[in-house]
Amino acid sequence: MAILIVTHSMDNEAPRAVTRALESRGERVYRFDTDLFPTELQLALDERGGGRLSGPSGVLELSEVSAVWYRRNSTGSRIPKELDPQLRKPSVEESRRLVFGMLAALGVFQLDSLETVRRAEHKPLQLALAHQLGLEVPRTLMTNDPEAVRAFAASCPGGVVTKMMSSFAVYDERGREQVVFTTPLGAKELEDLEGLDLCPMTFQERLTKQLELRVTVVGERVMAAAIDSQALPKAREDWRREGAALVEAWKPYTLPEPVRARVLGLMDALGLNYGAFDFIVTPEGRHVFLEVNPAGEFMWLMRHPGLPIDEALADVLTGRAARRLGPKPLAR
Image (cartoon, rainbow, N blue to C red; front, side, top):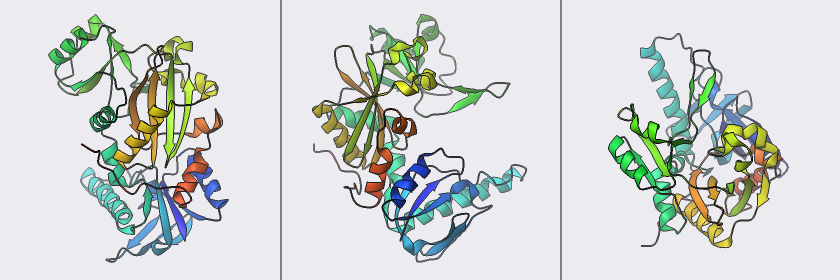
Protein backbone atom coordinates (compact mmCIF):
# COMPACT_ATOMS: atom_id res chain seq x y z
CA MET A 1 0.00 0.00 0.00
CA ALA A 2 1.05 3.62 -0.50
CA ILE A 3 0.14 7.13 0.56
CA LEU A 4 -0.26 9.55 -2.35
CA ILE A 5 0.97 13.14 -1.91
CA VAL A 6 -0.56 15.50 -4.48
CA THR A 7 1.51 18.67 -4.92
CA HIS A 8 3.82 20.26 -7.53
CA SER A 9 7.56 20.19 -8.14
CA MET A 10 8.13 23.78 -6.92
CA ASP A 11 6.53 23.15 -3.52
CA ASN A 12 8.56 23.89 -0.39
CA GLU A 13 10.00 21.45 2.16
CA ALA A 14 6.58 20.42 3.55
CA PRO A 15 6.01 17.33 1.33
CA ARG A 16 9.54 16.08 2.08
CA ALA A 17 9.02 16.57 5.83
CA VAL A 18 5.73 14.66 5.79
CA THR A 19 7.29 11.98 3.56
CA ARG A 20 10.05 11.44 6.13
CA ALA A 21 7.47 11.17 8.92
CA LEU A 22 5.44 8.65 6.92
CA GLU A 23 8.48 6.57 5.94
CA SER A 24 9.57 6.45 9.58
CA ARG A 25 6.22 4.72 10.20
CA GLY A 26 7.01 2.14 7.54
CA GLU A 27 4.79 3.65 4.84
CA ARG A 28 5.47 3.84 1.12
CA VAL A 29 4.97 7.35 -0.27
CA TYR A 30 4.31 8.31 -3.88
CA ARG A 31 4.70 11.99 -4.79
CA PHE A 32 2.47 13.20 -7.62
CA ASP A 33 3.86 16.51 -8.90
CA THR A 34 0.82 17.73 -10.81
CA ASP A 35 2.77 20.26 -12.90
CA LEU A 36 4.39 17.29 -14.65
CA PHE A 37 1.02 16.09 -15.92
CA PRO A 38 0.32 15.54 -18.77
CA THR A 39 3.68 16.46 -20.31
CA GLU A 40 6.09 14.33 -18.22
CA LEU A 41 3.90 12.02 -16.17
CA GLN A 42 1.34 9.50 -17.36
CA LEU A 43 -2.00 8.62 -15.79
CA ALA A 44 -4.20 5.79 -17.02
CA LEU A 45 -7.67 5.37 -15.53
CA ASP A 46 -10.33 2.81 -16.43
CA GLU A 47 -14.13 2.69 -16.04
CA ARG A 48 -13.85 0.99 -12.63
CA GLY A 49 -11.61 3.69 -11.15
CA GLY A 50 -8.53 1.51 -11.50
CA GLY A 51 -5.32 2.47 -13.20
CA ARG A 52 -1.77 3.66 -12.63
CA LEU A 53 0.50 6.66 -12.35
CA SER A 54 3.90 6.58 -14.09
CA GLY A 55 6.47 9.32 -13.52
CA PRO A 56 9.67 10.36 -11.72
CA SER A 57 8.53 8.56 -8.56
CA GLY A 58 8.13 5.30 -10.47
CA VAL A 59 4.91 3.40 -11.11
CA LEU A 60 1.97 3.37 -8.73
CA GLU A 61 -1.03 1.11 -9.15
CA LEU A 62 -4.02 3.14 -7.95
CA SER A 63 -5.38 0.06 -6.17
CA GLU A 64 -2.40 0.39 -3.79
CA VAL A 65 -3.35 3.89 -2.58
CA SER A 66 -4.48 3.82 1.06
CA ALA A 67 -4.75 7.58 1.69
CA VAL A 68 -4.17 10.91 -0.08
CA TRP A 69 -2.69 14.18 1.13
CA TYR A 70 -4.08 16.78 -1.28
CA ARG A 71 -1.83 19.82 -0.82
CA ARG A 72 -1.29 21.75 -4.05
CA ASN A 73 -2.36 21.58 -7.68
CA SER A 74 -0.68 22.89 -10.82
CA THR A 75 -1.99 20.46 -13.43
CA GLY A 76 -1.26 21.46 -17.01
CA SER A 77 1.11 24.31 -16.17
CA ARG A 78 3.87 22.88 -18.39
CA ILE A 79 1.70 22.58 -21.47
CA PRO A 80 3.53 24.96 -23.84
CA LYS A 81 2.35 28.56 -23.57
CA GLU A 82 2.98 28.91 -27.31
CA LEU A 83 0.18 26.48 -28.06
CA ASP A 84 -2.87 28.05 -29.70
CA PRO A 85 -5.05 29.28 -26.77
CA GLN A 86 -8.04 27.52 -28.33
CA LEU A 87 -6.11 24.27 -27.93
CA ARG A 88 -4.19 24.99 -24.72
CA LYS A 89 -7.25 25.88 -22.63
CA PRO A 90 -9.10 22.60 -23.29
CA SER A 91 -5.84 20.66 -22.86
CA VAL A 92 -5.42 22.11 -19.37
CA GLU A 93 -9.08 21.57 -18.55
CA GLU A 94 -9.11 17.94 -19.69
CA SER A 95 -5.92 17.30 -17.71
CA ARG A 96 -7.42 18.82 -14.57
CA ARG A 97 -10.62 16.84 -14.99
CA LEU A 98 -8.70 13.59 -15.26
CA VAL A 99 -6.63 14.34 -12.13
CA PHE A 100 -9.63 15.46 -10.07
CA GLY A 101 -11.68 12.57 -11.43
CA MET A 102 -9.00 10.13 -10.37
CA LEU A 103 -9.01 11.54 -6.84
CA ALA A 104 -12.80 11.37 -6.66
CA ALA A 105 -12.81 7.75 -7.86
CA LEU A 106 -10.13 6.45 -5.51
CA GLY A 107 -12.53 5.84 -2.64
CA VAL A 108 -9.90 6.29 0.09
CA PHE A 109 -9.37 8.77 2.92
CA GLN A 110 -8.18 12.18 1.70
CA LEU A 111 -6.70 14.98 3.75
CA ASP A 112 -8.64 16.81 2.54
CA SER A 113 -10.87 16.06 -0.44
CA LEU A 114 -11.10 18.71 -3.14
CA GLU A 115 -14.83 19.16 -2.53
CA THR A 116 -14.27 19.65 1.21
CA VAL A 117 -11.45 22.15 0.65
CA ARG A 118 -13.43 24.18 -1.91
CA ARG A 119 -16.43 24.44 0.43
CA ALA A 120 -14.28 25.32 3.44
CA GLU A 121 -12.48 28.09 1.53
CA HIS A 122 -15.64 30.24 1.43
CA LYS A 123 -14.96 33.08 3.88
CA PRO A 124 -18.65 33.99 4.38
CA LEU A 125 -19.32 30.39 5.40
CA GLN A 126 -16.37 30.37 7.79
CA LEU A 127 -17.49 33.56 9.52
CA ALA A 128 -21.11 32.43 9.79
CA LEU A 129 -20.18 29.05 11.26
CA ALA A 130 -17.62 30.58 13.63
CA HIS A 131 -20.24 33.04 14.87
CA GLN A 132 -22.78 30.24 15.40
CA LEU A 133 -20.20 28.27 17.39
CA GLY A 134 -19.55 31.19 19.72
CA LEU A 135 -16.19 32.37 18.39
CA GLU A 136 -15.80 36.12 18.37
CA VAL A 137 -15.58 37.44 14.81
CA PRO A 138 -14.95 41.02 13.64
CA ARG A 139 -17.79 43.05 12.18
CA THR A 140 -17.49 42.40 8.46
CA LEU A 141 -18.89 43.65 5.16
CA MET A 142 -18.17 41.98 1.81
CA THR A 143 -19.45 44.13 -1.04
CA ASN A 144 -19.00 46.02 -4.29
CA ASP A 145 -21.20 48.92 -3.07
CA PRO A 146 -19.17 52.07 -2.17
CA GLU A 147 -22.05 53.66 -0.24
CA ALA A 148 -22.47 50.53 1.87
CA VAL A 149 -18.72 50.66 2.65
CA ARG A 150 -18.90 54.28 3.77
CA ALA A 151 -21.92 53.58 5.98
CA PHE A 152 -20.15 50.56 7.47
CA ALA A 153 -16.99 52.58 8.15
CA ALA A 154 -19.03 55.30 9.86
CA SER A 155 -20.39 52.67 12.26
CA CYS A 156 -16.89 51.44 13.26
CA PRO A 157 -15.37 53.87 15.79
CA GLY A 158 -11.94 52.25 15.56
CA GLY A 159 -11.81 52.45 11.78
CA VAL A 160 -11.84 49.77 9.12
CA VAL A 161 -9.40 47.63 7.16
CA THR A 162 -9.81 46.03 3.76
CA LYS A 163 -8.61 42.67 2.48
CA MET A 164 -9.26 40.15 -0.27
CA MET A 165 -11.05 36.82 0.09
CA SER A 166 -8.43 35.09 -2.08
CA SER A 167 -4.65 35.16 -1.93
CA PHE A 168 -2.92 36.51 -5.00
CA ALA A 169 -0.15 38.83 -6.14
CA VAL A 170 0.18 41.40 -8.90
CA TYR A 171 3.44 42.28 -10.65
CA ASP A 172 4.77 45.73 -11.46
CA GLU A 173 6.43 46.77 -14.71
CA ARG A 174 9.77 45.39 -13.44
CA GLY A 175 8.27 42.00 -12.64
CA ARG A 176 8.37 42.52 -8.86
CA GLU A 177 5.69 40.75 -6.84
CA GLN A 178 3.24 43.03 -5.07
CA VAL A 179 1.15 41.10 -2.51
CA VAL A 180 -2.24 42.45 -1.43
CA PHE A 181 -2.05 42.79 2.37
CA THR A 182 -4.64 43.82 4.95
CA THR A 183 -4.78 47.63 4.67
CA PRO A 184 -6.42 50.31 6.84
CA LEU A 185 -8.70 52.80 5.09
CA GLY A 186 -8.69 56.49 5.92
CA ALA A 187 -11.09 59.22 4.88
CA LYS A 188 -9.28 59.75 1.57
CA GLU A 189 -9.47 56.06 0.62
CA LEU A 190 -13.12 55.85 1.65
CA GLU A 191 -13.93 58.80 -0.57
CA ASP A 192 -12.17 57.22 -3.55
CA LEU A 193 -13.43 53.64 -3.93
CA GLU A 194 -12.99 53.55 -7.68
CA GLY A 195 -12.82 50.05 -9.05
CA LEU A 196 -15.02 48.49 -6.37
CA ASP A 197 -17.70 48.06 -9.04
CA LEU A 198 -15.26 45.77 -10.88
CA CYS A 199 -14.00 43.76 -7.89
CA PRO A 200 -15.78 43.33 -4.54
CA MET A 201 -13.65 43.45 -1.40
CA THR A 202 -13.90 42.58 2.27
CA PHE A 203 -14.09 45.29 4.91
CA GLN A 204 -13.73 44.68 8.65
CA GLU A 205 -13.65 46.73 11.79
CA ARG A 206 -10.09 47.61 12.78
CA LEU A 207 -9.11 45.88 16.02
CA THR A 208 -6.35 46.79 18.44
CA LYS A 209 -3.87 43.91 18.61
CA GLN A 210 -1.65 42.57 21.33
CA LEU A 211 -0.70 39.38 19.52
CA GLU A 212 -1.55 37.49 16.36
CA LEU A 213 -1.95 33.73 16.41
CA ARG A 214 -1.51 30.96 13.88
CA VAL A 215 -3.42 27.93 15.11
CA THR A 216 -2.70 24.76 13.14
CA VAL A 217 -5.18 21.92 13.57
CA VAL A 218 -4.49 18.40 12.33
CA GLY A 219 -7.25 15.95 13.16
CA GLU A 220 -7.97 16.55 16.85
CA ARG A 221 -4.55 18.05 17.55
CA VAL A 222 -4.46 21.83 18.09
CA MET A 223 -1.06 23.57 17.87
CA ALA A 224 -0.91 27.33 18.44
CA ALA A 225 1.87 29.88 17.99
CA ALA A 226 1.92 33.62 18.69
CA ILE A 227 3.74 36.59 17.18
CA ASP A 228 4.07 40.12 18.53
CA SER A 229 3.13 41.81 15.28
CA GLN A 230 3.21 45.21 17.00
CA ALA A 231 6.99 44.99 17.45
CA LEU A 232 7.62 46.26 13.90
CA PRO A 233 5.69 49.22 12.43
CA LYS A 234 5.09 47.65 9.02
CA ALA A 235 3.71 44.45 10.61
CA ARG A 236 1.09 46.10 12.80
CA GLU A 237 -1.78 45.72 10.33
CA ASP A 238 -0.58 42.48 8.72
CA TRP A 239 2.37 40.52 10.14
CA ARG A 240 3.10 39.06 6.69
CA ARG A 241 4.59 42.40 5.60
CA GLU A 242 7.52 41.56 7.90
CA GLY A 243 7.21 37.79 7.75
CA ALA A 244 10.92 37.19 7.12
CA ALA A 245 12.01 39.55 9.90
CA LEU A 246 9.61 37.96 12.41
CA VAL A 247 10.10 34.33 11.44
CA GLU A 248 12.24 33.44 14.46
CA ALA A 249 10.03 35.36 16.90
CA TRP A 250 7.08 32.94 16.90
CA LYS A 251 6.41 31.44 20.34
CA PRO A 252 4.27 28.51 21.52
CA TYR A 253 0.85 29.61 22.74
CA THR A 254 -1.84 27.86 24.76
CA LEU A 255 -5.38 28.61 23.62
CA PRO A 256 -8.03 29.05 26.30
CA GLU A 257 -10.01 25.83 26.47
CA PRO A 258 -13.33 27.39 25.30
CA VAL A 259 -11.58 28.79 22.20
CA ARG A 260 -9.87 25.47 21.56
CA ALA A 261 -13.17 23.60 21.77
CA ARG A 262 -14.84 26.02 19.33
CA VAL A 263 -11.93 25.72 16.90
CA LEU A 264 -12.43 21.96 16.86
CA GLY A 265 -16.16 22.54 16.43
CA LEU A 266 -15.46 24.63 13.33
CA MET A 267 -13.21 21.91 11.95
CA ASP A 268 -16.06 19.45 12.47
CA ALA A 269 -18.58 21.75 10.77
CA LEU A 270 -16.27 22.20 7.76
CA GLY A 271 -15.23 18.54 7.68
CA LEU A 272 -11.56 19.46 7.63
CA ASN A 273 -8.67 17.34 8.88
CA TYR A 274 -6.21 20.19 8.35
CA GLY A 275 -6.76 23.89 8.95
CA ALA A 276 -4.52 26.91 9.56
CA PHE A 277 -6.42 29.48 11.66
CA ASP A 278 -5.62 33.17 12.07
CA PHE A 279 -6.63 34.95 15.28
CA ILE A 280 -6.11 38.36 16.84
CA VAL A 281 -5.60 38.62 20.60
CA THR A 282 -6.64 42.07 21.85
CA PRO A 283 -5.05 43.86 24.83
CA GLU A 284 -8.13 42.79 26.84
CA GLY A 285 -7.43 39.16 26.05
CA ARG A 286 -10.24 38.62 23.53
CA HIS A 287 -9.53 35.98 20.90
CA VAL A 288 -11.00 37.15 17.58
CA PHE A 289 -11.26 34.66 14.71
CA LEU A 290 -10.25 35.96 11.27
CA GLU A 291 -10.18 32.94 8.96
CA VAL A 292 -9.11 29.33 8.45
CA ASN A 293 -7.03 28.27 5.46
CA PRO A 294 -7.68 24.62 4.49
CA ALA A 295 -4.26 24.41 2.82
CA GLY A 296 -2.21 27.00 4.72
CA GLU A 297 1.57 26.85 4.96
CA PHE A 298 3.25 25.55 8.10
CA MET A 299 6.97 24.95 7.53
CA TRP A 300 8.09 28.08 9.38
CA LEU A 301 6.14 26.92 12.44
CA MET A 302 7.99 23.61 12.43
CA ARG A 303 11.24 25.56 12.68
CA HIS A 304 10.04 28.36 14.99
CA PRO A 305 8.69 27.43 17.50
CA GLY A 306 9.08 23.76 16.53
CA LEU A 307 5.51 22.52 16.17
CA PRO A 308 5.37 18.80 15.12
CA ILE A 309 2.90 19.40 12.28
CA ASP A 310 4.52 16.83 9.97
CA GLU A 311 4.17 14.15 12.64
CA ALA A 312 0.52 15.03 13.22
CA LEU A 313 -0.21 14.84 9.48
CA ALA A 314 1.51 11.46 9.26
CA ASP A 315 -0.56 10.13 12.17
CA VAL A 316 -3.86 11.12 10.53
CA LEU A 317 -2.83 9.88 7.08
CA THR A 318 -1.89 6.47 8.48
CA GLY A 319 -5.00 6.20 10.64
CA ARG A 320 -3.04 6.38 13.89
CA ALA A 321 -5.05 9.47 14.88
CA ALA A 322 -8.74 10.30 14.57
CA ARG A 323 -10.05 11.39 11.15
CA ARG A 324 -13.00 13.49 10.03
CA LEU A 325 -14.90 11.89 7.18
CA GLY A 326 -17.07 14.85 6.20
CA PRO A 327 -18.77 18.05 7.43
CA LYS A 328 -20.88 17.72 10.58
CA PRO A 329 -24.03 19.89 10.54
CA LEU A 330 -24.42 22.29 13.46
CA ALA A 331 -27.29 21.66 15.83
CA ARG A 332 -30.06 24.25 15.45
